[in-house]
Length: 118
Image (cartoon, rainbow, N blue to C red):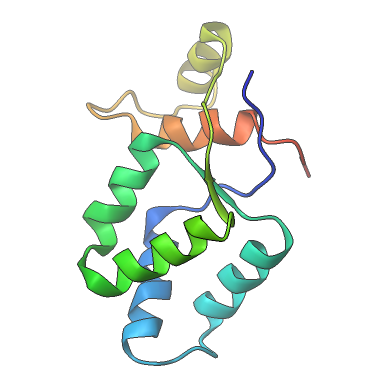
């Protein structure tokens, strides 16, 4: 299993950070939260989550922010894994929809292989 240290962050939260950066609000609540997460833990992603970030945020501000954090090692790509039995339980017991793209499941798979759990 390819584990990594970091936090899995939804694309909608990243979109708020990018919006605050565009407005030059580096003291915005979303920016400050993500800045602290990046400084202490980092953010972990997989190709599906990276694509969702790009689709949700897009633009040059996102591109420069993302690449800057990635180059510094604060955004890291990991290999997401989750046993099929657990995937079935998440769908059947907890009710996570089995949508066409199943992107929510990728967030869970990434979180599953992070080192720190709370």
